[in-house]
Image (cartoon, rainbow, N blue to C red):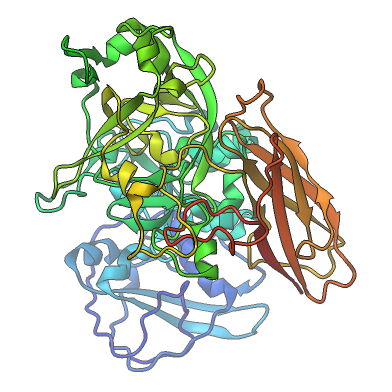
Length: 619
């Protein structure tokens, strides 16, 4: 049976040559929301012609008898739409195709075309794209709460529903929502899609205006079930895959590699809030993520030149110390590497400009722990020593553990604020960010902030790990991978001054009717140096304007947190259809970003801190 007027339902219509068996007399109770989903495409007047469809009409008597279409966009509906066929659910699980059949006479107001017999053919693997679970009647007070007696879905199941074809599912606390219908009508749909298949919490941390009763009430209209408690840990580890037990990541995180996993958030979302939500914080892993039982966790502190051996601390022991907090920015050494790669090819992960984040970390000062085990600041033998950190993440092939080190003087400095942290923004660290304990070294490059901390060693030498000795070092532009001598270069510790344009996003378009533009971004400098000024240009650096700064006020050389900046400027009349938006930061020591990568290009692509550009078209 070939027919014209068949709807292209959100792009999932299967065209010619599809054999479909129809299953009837199977129980399935659909919700009115399902009918709205189906008829949305019909009422849009999407017209496509299919050829060679082999299918059988479904007996109308098997349709859900109480079905009504509640969707209308101005067309004339002369007869009632039928809903999805009663056999659909059974057919989906049986692995065969599904036919959705409507017998109606509908005239769309815009096209004036009539649909007499609309046939929708879907392959078995696509049936879940339109068979949506029944919505649960609820109220605002239930938002995020588990409701007894309704379906449960695991985080893995939710993660599969991340586009309009499969359906867009999201979670909020213990609840699961199908927001497919809501997305297209919402003005912020593109942003909401960043949470598709994941949780809403990190977005609502950023956009706090959404946390109110009216929004919760609307959200509950799309409730389809509860999030299974064990869902976030539902894994089937493959003994041959060392990464099989890695945690799930938020769908907004853009991967730069999957094994090991590394990723960053979209830049325009990154700077919406001063503190970066943990789920949206960039992830930098070198090895598989360990799964550590906090009840069995032990931190060893050793002294290479001390015969008394090792002191061990449990997590409970560490929490007996005086609690300290510090707001600090962590930045990967390769942040903005992709931009340096555009100048000349480099080696490493292709980070954009969001391998950076700002958070409040809570734990115990490393200084306090070292003092507890017998260190004295006045002892001259400690000068020139190093604090080596060893993580509990292990290379499955070499058995090497991630390691790094910092000068002991930084660890013992009462204003150095080095922490053994177990909380991030008031919540326990997630596995990706070092649960149960990580090192936080404010003002230092991210590579020294060792996660899953297992051992601290006080030594006359730096850490001998690969990542301290043979990585995270900068070289002259003339040095190549083949000629590099890592033994002659110092490891990166404090990071140079940095800034980036995050809004508008590079490659975006603005209206020619706009008279002004708002530019936003971040700035930071290592070593506790604060940001003194951020300059912004709309013409590639010919003319400059000073941005407004949002920053945490601290004492001299103790400015660990980033600066968020913004400026609204008139669009130049002679723009020629394009703006070259540029920013550069000046820190408290009057260090300023170089204008190009020419002088500090290096084959590893680290320390990429040239002027940040965002090319914007005007149409």
